[in-house]
Length: 214
Ligand SMILES: [Mg+2]
Image (cartoon, rainbow, N blue to C red):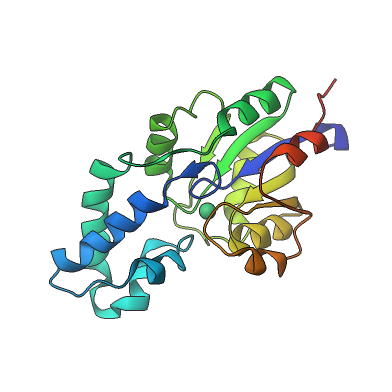
């Protein structure tokens, strides 16, 4: 594939395209009393967002991971859209990049069926070319979910956009340039340590990097 065939732009989903943390954390916390356990604090949970669910629960109650995951998976699909919404400007950005000829995919740690459902509910389904979840292969910071997204797009990648150090490390491991956004889960200091190519409070620089393809 030549350089001219590199048209792939990858986005993390939660905390990057969509402000979804309150609904995720609510469902995460719900599982504790549902299983007769004391819940951790909101801040303790927030610090772990971006990791797979079972790893997050293992931090707090390693003996109860399967039951907690089951409670979450019961609660979240009924409540995932209560407070979640795309961040301002996201839909417009995706439309513009698509019009410019780029191929756009989500690369998320959510499982694919839930990720697809969520993207559709947020009104982003028609503007993305592909939604790639992490289905039984290594999660970010491993590059697998990004490489699968690019394979599905049938192109090479240019940028990975994300809100956590996991996204930025996965982007680098996949050979992409990395764009950190500062409105998501991880503190800016943590993102700086990953030395992304861009670290921004908005997506304007991404548009500057990506002019219309001829
Ligand atoms: Mg994220």
